[in-house]
Amino acid sequence: MLRDARDGRLTASIARRDLEAAVLQAAQAAAGPSGIAVQRVDASLRTATPRELDVDLTITAKKFVTAIVHVRGRATVDDRLNARLGGLTAQGEGMVANLAVGLLRGHLQKLEGQQFSLLAFSLGNVRLRDVSLRATDGLEVTASFGGSDQGTR
Image (cartoon, rainbow, N blue to C red; front, side):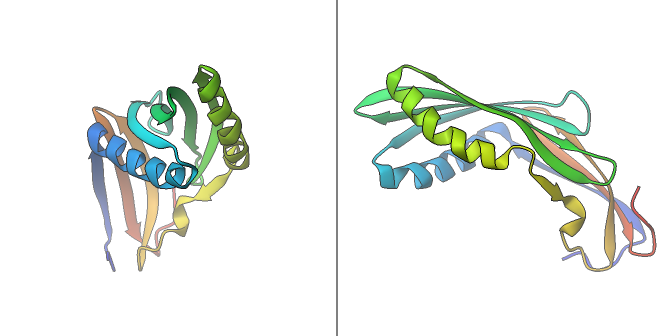
């Protein structure tokens, strides 16, 4: 844990294939009890600005027949370092995929517009001052931070 610092910058990244593997594992755990076998997740990430992340997931699953579902959304970080989810949509290819989309839409509606304070993450006496996102062949997050006596941006 970071306990104290005057100021600094931390960059963390995840490769697209590692992100896809993590989403695949989460999707398999969620769909498994329903007898659905999630076989593959393909992710496309874009950052129009350093504070906006567009995500496009293509999920391939099978229960009797193969179904392909596209899930899209955006995370936007405001000047107060609140992340908000929006533009969450799901579309399916085929009848079985459309049934899966019907189940997903309820979950996406609950998440639509949700706001999460990035300042809520505890960093000891260190305060988050800024964050920027960059889509490469994965996702890179850069956080600027400083001591608690220094305010946010």
